[in-house]
Image 1: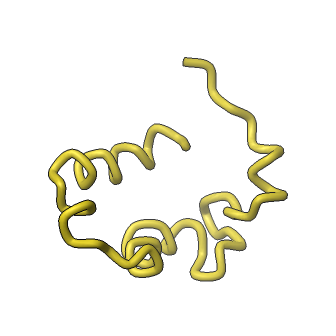
Image 2 (image 1 turned 45 degrees about the vertical axis):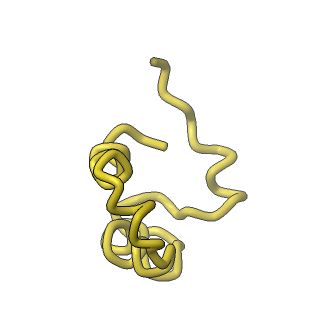
Length: 62
């Protein structure tokens, strides 16, 4: 997962908001991801989030 995604998700996870509220994954995706990755995950300004596409995404060195 790219670092910019962690900047969105990490505060939610650390605050307990995600775990405590039993969020709907589809709602979270629409709220935090769909604007860049598309509602159908086929990609817009962000890459497509499909298994076959993610295999070719290069991992960044730490």
